[in-house]
Image (cartoon, rainbow, N blue to C red; front, side, top):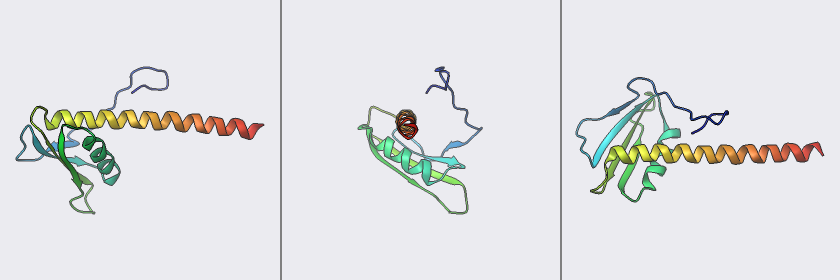
Length: 116
């Protein structure tokens, strides 16, 4: 991901925003995300499931009054849930970059047509 100057940007995540829940193995784990909801849950689930090494991925919001989201990932042998989660995040970031680029191009095109 690049910032507006074309330099590599980094994303800072607050301390302990993601926890691995008890009972995790390399091929099956549940993660709890603090301060997240369906917005990230559904998008991340979709991107993780696009990985052919992932057998199952689902998310839930344990209770509507708590700002927590749980994500369950199960992978086939040969890849870990941690690799699958990282790839899901990378793919989601790349998708957002494409959407942003196309949106800005369409916005600029529209603004140019309105000026004429």
